[in-house]
Structure formats: C-alpha cells, structure tokens
Image 1 (spheres, one colour):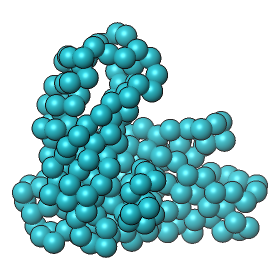
Image 2 (cartoon, rainbow, N blue to C red):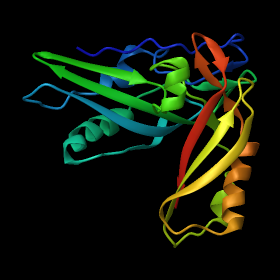
Image 3 (cartoon, rainbow, N blue to C red):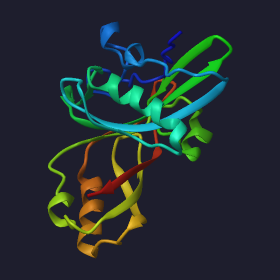
Image 4 (cartoon, rainbow, N blue to C red):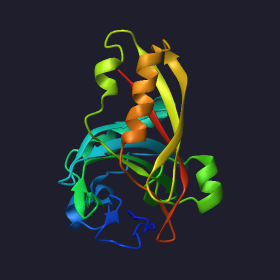
Length: 222
C-alpha cells in the first residue's frame, strides 16, 4: 500500500503564496503513486533524503538523492525513476508560479506483508522537527539567475553546506557556510553563494497551515 502523508501547507493567503506540494495533481502523476517499493525479504524502515528543482509547470528536474550505503541504492533508483514523470502543484509567490528548490524525504516501511511509502516536504533538520514536528513543510527557495555559478570555481571540486534563517515572511538572513568536502572556495565565491541566498525569494516553512520561521540548509557544489 502506498500512503501519501497529508501535511500542512496552505498559507493564510493561498492565492498569494503557496509552497509546491505533491497532493494537488492527478493521482497518476503523483510521486507517491509512481514509486515502486523495491523487493525486500525482511522488515525494515529506510529513509531517503532528496532534493529537486520544481519547474513553474510542476515538473521535477535535477532530482538527486543521497545514499548511506549500498542497501539504499534500490530505493534511490525507485525514487529517481518515479520523479522523471511525476508532477507537483508548483509553488506560488505573489500570485505567480515559480521554479523552486525542494527538499524532501521518502520513508519506506516494510513490516510483514505491508509496504508503505510516506513523503515529507522537509529534509528532517532536527531543530525544525523539534519546533514543528516530523511533517512540517520546509522553506522552498526560488531558483533564479544563481550568480554564484559564474563566480565559483568550475574545475576544483568542492561541496559546501549553507545554513540560513528564513522568517515567516519568507526573508532570509544570517547565512553561514561550512566545507563538507573538497576545497574551501575563495571568499568571492563564498560571498556570492551567501548573496544568492539573501537575494532569493522563499516560500516560508509551514506548520499547521501557517508560515513559521525556520532553519534552511542547502548544499552547493560544482
């Protein structure tokens, strides 16, 4: 059985600002309906963390998921295959649909003969879960011109973790960077990434149908 978690996500003014969501599209295009549970011979719970760019049309592009070990590979493959033809209700800001960066989790639960799949529109950051619960809707960043891509190195490998605060008004503040792997890029590159975040539009995080302040984390690499 496939189950789509009905999480909060309707702002006070739904026509003005609304995060992208999995539910408000025809069932055959929903990501949850398209994911096929991999073959399993034992009980297990697997949580896969992913991100995707959701076009103004609702199409999922540049989807990527993270694996902890080889056991996760089949689950990632199932998500990636489903995402190619899945559709979301796109994000809306100022009454207009926007291309956004979406972080989400897929939880696979195998228990006896039962096979359940749950989707969450957040990456599971502990401080946000502590404040708002397991199924809050994370802030979503509008993808724009991305000036950092022209300033940061193209050949030297790097992976940076950016953390910022996003208020209930969708405004970002206090971005910080830490190196995950590879080189630490130049100060110009670091500042360009921070400026990209500070100049970006966001749909704020949502909890119980209302916008809330939250921590926002995004990975940057070449």
